[in-house]
Image 1 (cartoon, one colour):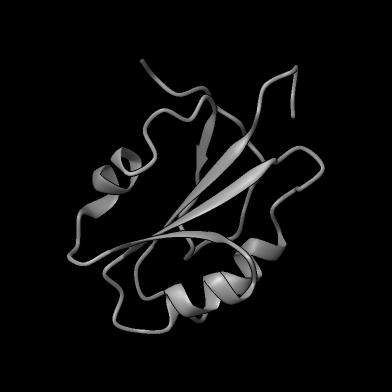
Image 2 (image 1 turned 180 degrees about the vertical axis):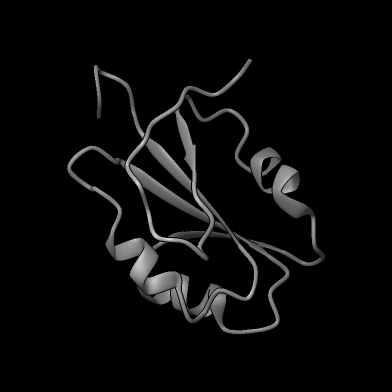
Length: 97
């Protein structure tokens, strides 16, 4: 939590089996409360790896794109979106209303 607010990281992912574990390991869990991976119809083991390491996972049957991954988690109070293809940089932003 930060300033009494729950921090949720949303990780859109598409064919990210090679980078997912490193990206997840760099999340600053001292301030992040929850991580949700949205697998955008990957053709590799992205969702399998995410579930194995304990990430809450939403799986799309067809590709929705980045906007679709945001819609999949609408209603979360704080979101810092990071792709699973890049390392995490701890910046927090509020969800636009």
